[in-house]
Length: 397
Image (tube, rainbow, N blue to C red; front, side, top):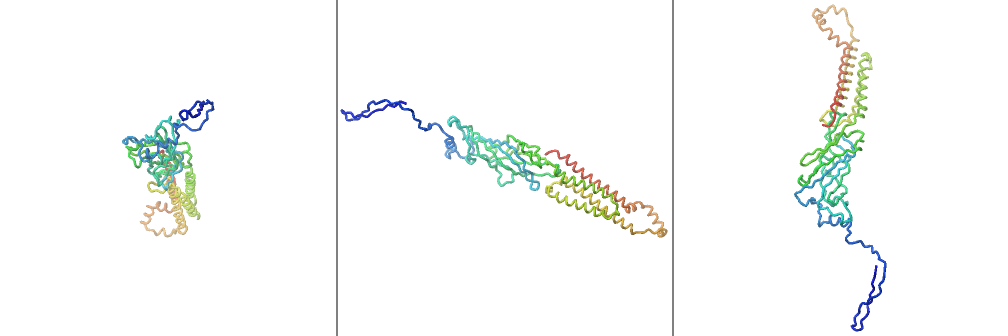
């Protein structure tokens, strides 16, 4: 850097001071550390775009007010928390990505050192009111996280959290049932001409298959123009736990009920044996009451299965009681041969006409065989109910 030094010398003739050429010095260039004035930062960009004088977050981001704001949604199912049958509530953890274009938030990246995006709070910019219809929380709208604004005006944000929605249960095929849960997405304030929402994709992540009681069979989107989009979840119940807990013990009870018919009627413990079986059914019924859905729209197949088995136990107990009564009466009756001679001819003919019917009702072996057939029929009917529920429950309709 070259520096020319001038000296100020007085002029005797005029009395004024004049510059005279001085010595030329060479000095190194010293950096001042002051940035160029034309280099703008992210703070400058935010002030120029988001200042209250030029931007209003309550106004739709369209220069032409007749144009709609197109909002795209992407639903990612992260995890199935559970399905509460008694409350008819479906809990899930999910991502909902939301994007739209704000025509007021665009800039030239070269003017800001190549800055192509920045992050702000959702309250600073306009955000769509994405409403979940069927949500069981106090707030139906989605709570967005931080918003990323790109230089071309595209704005991205997302919802991440637990979403609890209503689910209409159908327990007819319980425990081999499929449940179809759904909710609607749309705008509560704006019309489709102002804000047009569209679900672009629905993604099922691998972690959504880790629920121990439910298997997410499929997720799909359905358009319900012009206002809403529906997201449907098809859930399949994992029935192994319920089958082992209820069906296997019930099968064992059925075998014991059929064996009870082999016990002789003279055995005094036969009725006590039947009462013990009935009480064991009541214990299982109390446990079953905690797992069955509490609704009156349909009777669960497992409940029908259990009640038929319980009815077969009641039939066994009734037959045992009647057989014990007949055996006790027969032991106290004595047949007098002399009295038979005094019987009239009409009475003799009546006895000859209906000997088999009376004998059948006095014979405990006939009652045991009839009770065995009825109990076996009830048990087979119960098994058919479960088999039919397994066949018909093949997916969500």
